[in-house]
Image 1 (cartoon, rainbow, N blue to C red):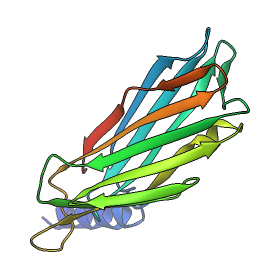
Image 2: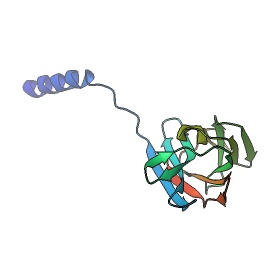
Image 3: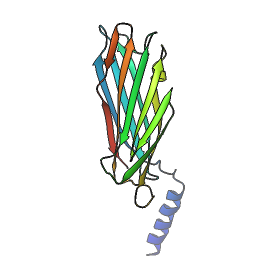
Image 4: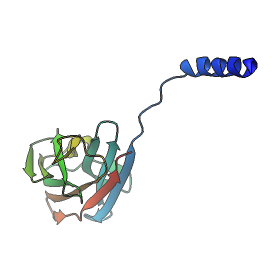
Length: 177
């Protein structure tokens, strides 16, 4: 019996020095390609990571142009409007989004948020995206609500000489993990 206790103590002591685990997240990514001009395509994408530990999600929604040579930004003369909607199918979840993109406005309405970005001119792909944080709260308790799904959808209207199109929605959806 004494040998078992000594062995257990040794294992416990060894476990004490292992590195702490990294918080896991439930992740989803979505990408949609839509024809632009000639061989070029409009690529819209959403990335979503939700953390159960504190009831928040990190998100990125954006767009770029995919050419035969790879991903690039948009040409000069561009005007674009990106609309990103953040919601849950659970009506008791209040999702509060905070974002940081170019020429941005966040509209809040009963638990869903809509983020609108306006873009002007040429630039690298990173220019045409918004990212931020979503906090999920239970309407009745005010505490983090992590037993719900989170949905992030984005679409973009792109206008430049010879092109005026609106992409279909690209949606990522996940739960908290």
